[in-house]
Length: 204
Length: 204
Image (cartoon, rainbow over all chains, first blue to last red):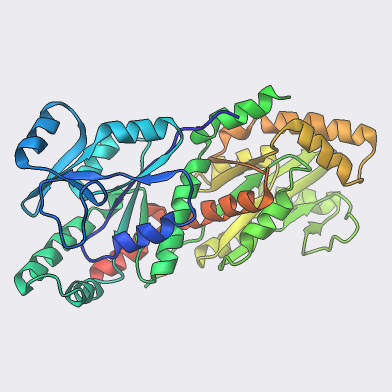
């Protein structure tokens, strides 16, 4: 059987919604799946490693990546630049590996326009009260920063309707199972099973 | 939170592909899910119960159901009539229960046209050689009947490309997991999460 192309899964959700946990749990036990690593000009948070969580680059390097067309999308977010290196995504999809892209709303829109076959997922909090509780619970931001994040969250969540799928992260196991299901279903879409189906017919 | 509508999942696949087993396994552990019971004029096979596997009806009764608009689709298959009672499906979808419809290719096409939001899935055998082996293995049909089923199978499988999703039943656990994923993903489609999403916003 010939290999099918991988799927590009674009995921957005407000800060504090638990996106990383949901994605990590959904990816457990999924084969042929990689996480796209973004380039960013923001400074690493404690524990974040270059080349693992992000490619941490300078503003100058980021500008040259834009200029050379090396980014699938790029956006500014809370004063920092984020971008998605194009080449590793294309190589993975071509050899049948699916790619998860965790990006904010602006970037997701750019990706959907340039790659309409991508599958987009928005993760909503069960309520904004709960989101506020989670943001405070991680003891990471000042009061002012939390207020800013909440305001951004409301704006971002207003774009949920533009995505193919919506997941509500009330219970993390359910949310992860839903994301995993969306990823598996993407691989079963008829357009992604054309090689397989025609090989079955050729064997007749 | 308000309830979302259920999804209508339309499943086809040739005789002997293992559809019933895949569906039964996929439905394990899925809540809010029922199996649509077809009306048929064919005679019960050993073990089949009226009102459980099918509504076994006479040709006269079947004709009156057509005349009264009580069927969502109906078709003739290997000399027998099959039809899908409309009312129970609509009632289930309305109260948030998803419905699985196991029907042949003609009926699936009718349903997709009258209910374009339904999600359609075709189950293919890994090869026609394997399908032949499975048909012989169940020791149920005469040689002539097996040849007829194989010919019908080839025709039916030619319609796989018209379905939203294709599953290849090579390994039954994988196939069932894929079907379960497609069903869960259907419930996460943005159009099926509108009530939930707007309730989250109204709580702001």
